[in-house]
Image (tube, rainbow, N blue to C red; front, top):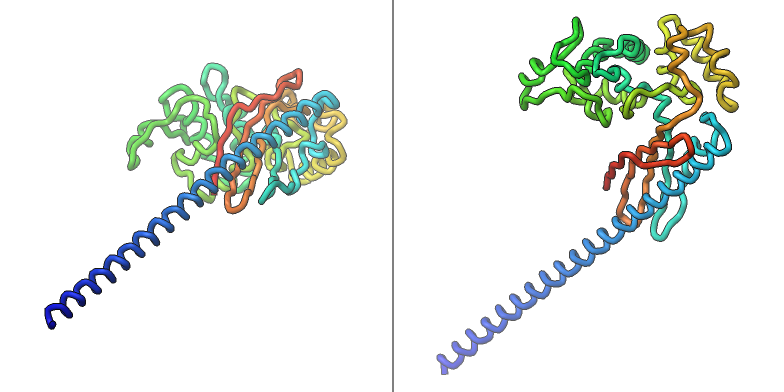
Length: 307
């Protein structure tokens, strides 16, 4: 009798263990299934967000094409310069902004077609750094970063002899750069300096003019060593309603003829920033757009961030 009771006890414990294991397996399967479903939903939402962002890019391309048909000048009072307000989409929203990149200083202007340093652009970059309260020696360091030779400029240059001594070591590109983020790697550059400088510089293919209608105040101040803050404030006020009526008239007494030749009132390069939120997925699309003389607009560089 006692043996029978013992056997029944063992059977009961075994049954309970099996039930517990089965419950654990079922719970794990349910959890894994829930995670798989959630991952699938997130991936679908991300793919949808990317398509929405590309659709917004196409819309902006049409706006820029139409803008050139209506006006040969680009200024901050035009439709493209207005922020895209939040627009509702299924389970989310899309918003963004577009910026004239030729309102910034193009660091690739620091070198000429032969890869040698352009002294006038170098001096302007030094003035821009001074206007921002930054160390002007970053101008020479940046120029050495992209010029074609390995000879460090005096007194502010830096070439491979500096960078190969870092941990980890690396080399300078010695060619035009594709993104200003590359300057985070130049000698002595820190986060605070780059954060302050980045809104005023860009990296565009080849040499480009500065659009006086959209240039940042710091870039305007950098045009000539005799330019004053009062001059810049007057220029910004003058262009507010629809750009300068005549750039040559507005700037002739403020800058040299060589600088005047580097100013323009129209733009080829724009940067679009589109943010799309769907449910818990949020992506940011940055797109560099190049507009040709006939209004054809081509994305030349895209970068995508997700959160």
